[in-house]
Image 1 (tube, rainbow, N blue to C red):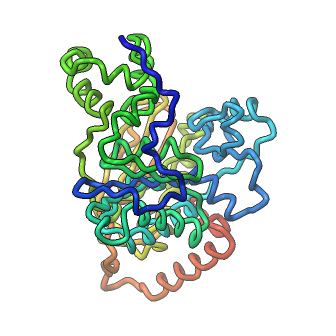
Image 2 (spheres, rainbow, N blue to C red):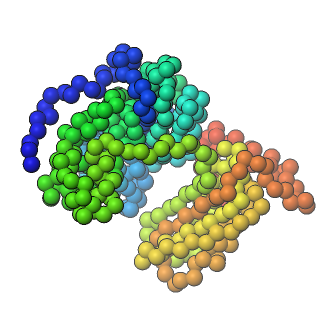
Length: 406
C-alpha cells in the first residue's frame, strides 16, 4: 500500500476564534457534537474549588471499586476510567479520591440540557454529558459555526462547566472532531473534507472501533484510517460482515444516521455491588431499601412519579435475574421500599451468595401520584417535603429511613 504524508495541516480545521462567516455548510447537513470535559470531575471542582489542579479520582472505596472518572492530571499518570481504584492509586499516589455525588451530576446535566434546548432546533442527549444537535440551515441566519461556539461559551459562562465541540456534516465526524479538540476546545470539519480529515488518525478514533477490534485491525496492518480508506468495501464485508460495511463508510466520513430529538427519560435506576458476596437477608433488605429511598428522593426532585418497580439480583456465579411489579403512580419512599423488598422475597430463590442488587423505577410521569381514598396523604406529603429540604441543605445521607441502614 502507498504511504502518504500527513505531516502538513490540511487547512480545513478553523482555529478556535476563526471568522464564522468563512465556514458555511450551505445545503449540506450540519451536526454539532458537544461533550462535557471530565464531567464528574468538573462538577466536583465546582462544588469544592480546593480540588482544582489536583489529580482527582471519582469512585468507590472498597476492594472492588473502579474509577468512574478521573482528571487529566491523573490520566497523565496512566489512570483511566474503569480501572480498579487500588491500581489507580498505585499509579498516582497523590490523587484525591472522591466517592462522587450522583444527584449533583444529574442536576448539572439537566441544567446543560435545558440551556441547549432553549437555543437549538433539534437536540439529542446521547448520555449524561454528551449531546448532538442538527443545525442544518442555520447558515442563513447566524451561521452554524458562530452559533455552535456561542452555545459552548454559554455552557462555560452560565453553568461553569468546560466542554469540547465538533462540527461537521454528520455525527461520526463531529464526535471524532470533539475528541481531537479536547480538552476545552472546538474544531470544525468543512463539508467535503471528511475523508482527508480522518485519514491520518488511528482507527481507534472511529466511535464503533473498540480495543479488541482496534487490535485486530492493527494486526492486519490497518492501524490508520487512511489505510482503511484504500481497502475495497467487499474485502471488509468478507472480514467483518455488516460491520465491515459500516466501518468502510465511517472511515470515509459517511454517516447518514439522524439526530434523534431528546425525550424525557423513561426510567431511573441504582445498583450496588457488595464488597463481599452475601446471603444475609437483613443486609439484602437494607441495601435494597436504601436504593429505593434514594430513587424516591430523585423522583421527587424532578417532580415525577413512577408506575413500576423492578429489582435485579446478580448471584456470585454471575447469573442475573430480575422481576418487576406495577403499582399506582407514586413517589413515596415507603411504597417504593416495601415493593422492592416484596420483589426480593419472590426473586431470591437460590441458596447462593449475592454479588449485586439493583432497583429500577419506570413508567415515569410528571402527573400527580394516584391517591388512596382512605390514606392520610397530607401528613405523608408534608413529611417528604421536610425530608427533601433537609437533604438538600445537609446532604443526601443526612436523614435516612432506619430500614435502609445496615
